[in-house]
Length: 538
Image (cartoon, rainbow, N blue to C red; front, side, top):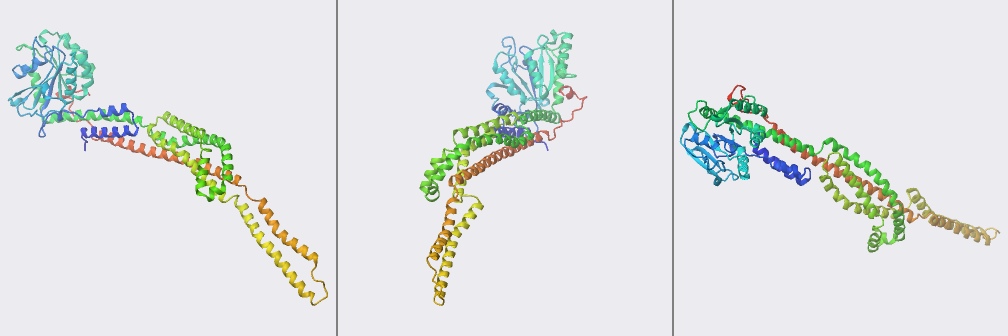
């Protein structure tokens, strides 16, 4: 099913508006899509399904357009003559049954002269006399450009002296494919055969292989006058079938132009292959930046580790003091230097993405929030790791050994005391049964030394092997920094993924509109030997 051209235009404008807001296309591209013209002959008049053929006389100053329309009407309905050789207004000549009370707003009735007739043979044709396109008055040119999209058949009127008019000729080349064309060499009573052949040659260069040219004269009764043939040709075109063919052809040409415009805009979005290169491009950039950051963080981390070690008790036990400690240490790690290095990495990444042909505005928007989050991520991760390191100083083996020594600090003295007590009891018990002397001074000294040694040895080991809070904080800060670097890398990759997904959505929407332009994208079949075929540019 063919998609209505006006609906395509509205869909295109909505897409262009949101693509511009998201930064996928620039203002010029969006404006070009927004300026797509949805006007057509079908939108000119209110009708009940079958509309008249809209025919317009167009040409330069003094070629006799208004005179031809007056001749057609049999009376002076369009102003013409020596006193006013330049047409400044649009004149409509139509059957009284055609309603023209509600023209499009850009075509005000105040600037239009109308004349009605009752001739049933001309009921299905609306004749229009256009202002002189080559006039120095800009309003004339503006009126012509406003009316052109509503015309089915353009009758290009020239005179023997002015058939090479440059301004009107440029318009013919620009509008050639959108209309059916008939050509009138007016004032032929003053013309020559060489001029006719030259005019036909010029039309051939413009794309008309066998143009339909009528030779007419303002004065009636001349043998060479072909005005009747012109009127007969127009009448033969005023059928519902031909009007539908012209309408379909014009619509398809506009769809093809819109499709080409959309395809050109699609190139501004960048390719999927380029977006697939972004993660690798960023990680390569981030590896280099990470090395620089880690080198630059060496001294700040040592100072911050010493600070945490000095305030470990406050940091872990006193929330108020911990807040003060964290605030005091906050500027020691992520400073202006680190922020500048991170910003440089993002900026260089954006520049490299731009060189790949990727729109960078959406990427910048995604990364801008990360520039503000980076200090918080580094601070949060480094502080968390430092707290964990201070709460569990040393490594697992070290902590296990110290736990064993604390156990020995309790068990060994108790074991020694128990052994000494046992010896005292046994010595006392046996001293009453034998003549062996009771223990003695040596035993007292040795037992005291044993108890002291079993207690002091674990105590000394615990004291000497106590983990360094500074080293623990340093290890925690390095771990936290590593976590923060990985998180920043992940945040950028997530931003790239989001941009890639949005790019896929934009290209998918654009491809959908382009596909709709191609639905029934075959111009209506027009027989090559038909009169209508001679009026069209392939």
